[in-house]
Amino acid sequence: MSKNPLNKQTVLQGTLILTVSWLVIRILGAVYRVPLGRMLGDVGLGIYAVPNQFYFLFFTISSAGIPVAVATVVSEKIAMGHYRDALRAFRMARTTMLILGLVFSLLLFAGAGWLIRSGLVPNPDAFLGMRAIAPVIFFAAVTAAYRGLFQGLQNMRAVAYSQLIDQTMLVAATLLFSYLLLPRGLAIAAAGANLGAVPGAVSATLMLALLYRMQRRELLELEQKDFSGARENTLSLLKKIFSTALPISFASVAMSITAIIDHKLIVDRLQLVGYSHEQAIAQYGQFNQMAMSFINISIALALSMGASIVPAITENFAVKNYDRIKNQVSQAVRIAIVFALPSAAGLCLLAGQLTQLVFAEKSAGVPLAALSSAVVFWSVHLVTAGALQGMGKAIIPVRNLIIGIIIKLAITYYFTPTPLGIRAAAFGTVVIFIVSSMLNLVAIAGMVGFSFNFSRTVFRPGLAAIAMSAVVLAVYRSAEIQIGGNNWPTLFAVIAGAVVYPVALVALGGVLADDVRRLPVIGTRAALLLEKIGKG
Image (cartoon, rainbow, N blue to C red; front, side, top):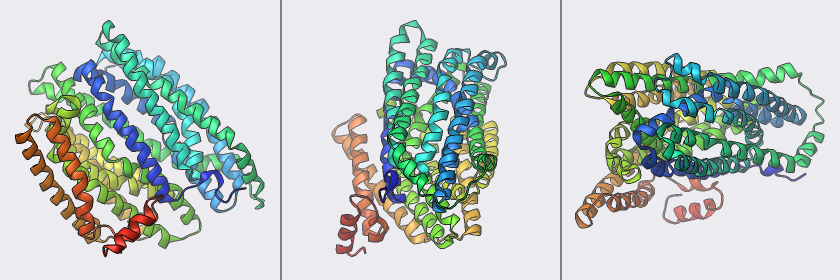
């Protein structure tokens, strides 16, 4: 057996691998919306968004928490040397997901008509899209079990590869199907876009099943190394899996239901102040499909870190190494904030320019500017939620998230029919993550402690972000005068910001050699460079 079974990576290596994967995925997700948005328009994007929300709702009910739950159980068992139980937990989860995925796929397919008739979906044009996307639930559920195994083994490459093939196939199929079906009407073209998710889901499932099959010998060798004599009964293992999975799924369900309620609230409340139904749908499309695309790209690193930290925290929690957990969480939060601050500043400053560049829709910059600060708090929420899940306290971030959601819905309801308009929904989303991230930090501090260096975590990165913002504005205005238009000035401003921020951060001492030393490939050289310039 190799010393590094199944290509296990460290937390930072896993984070980097998943971050690159997520960045590619998010960029693809944003890029394909450009031709899709121009084919379907904001009204068509609004139709396309609704089936995605219901798919996500049904998927989260059935299996959204499974990757983290399986990863938690697998990593805990491996840390204790109980390899047989680790692999039994995965096999039981896979069988359960096969059944649940099939049931919920059929429920969405058969229930699409009822959702329209009951008024839960205010747009009848979404009917075909809901049926088209229903099979994805089955394949995504099975994939969730495989991803949990590889994540628990800290093999983030397998997770990343499956995500990449899923998104690549989705982008290609979505554009192809919507283009081919566009002559048959907007509703059918939007349904074709929803159908585009099926090839990617199938491909991801087949890839992970193949990787599992290829590495089966190593897994069997891992089982043979188990001399503990321990064997947890089936019911107990299932209870462990679902005691972690259910709270996480509940949080995802809450977010899905929030998106569905948000859709109805936004459309209904905007019509109260004079918007037509089509105009209200268009506003929702700008908020949910255009503005949120930039936010989703910006939280990629935090999302990856939140996933990577779970098995590492679980291993240390199993052997009661609380000091190590405290250091891991503090470092993860600091890295998340250091990367989130410039993203939030850039999105706020260039909101209209970016949405004009990408979607040819400058008005989508209004909700994007209001959403921009969510990048910081959402990033902290993702990292702290992952830490709490790793410590077996998955219910805590769920409870905190729901508190934020309740406040958000109140903000959307009361303030959307005011001059704030669609910005009220955006501000409400920011509030969700302000509340949840702060409460998560309080919970972690109470359990294992939390080391917060304000200067290196907020103050110095904040100064670097301010310096970056000044340069970004200067470059944009100069290029606008010299070149004119929007696209090139925006691109130049983004490039300038990407260059200035890390330089300012290093100059201000916001990042030191020890922060980068453990990064794969570039870590050692980057640390030596920082030491040479006095940032050791």
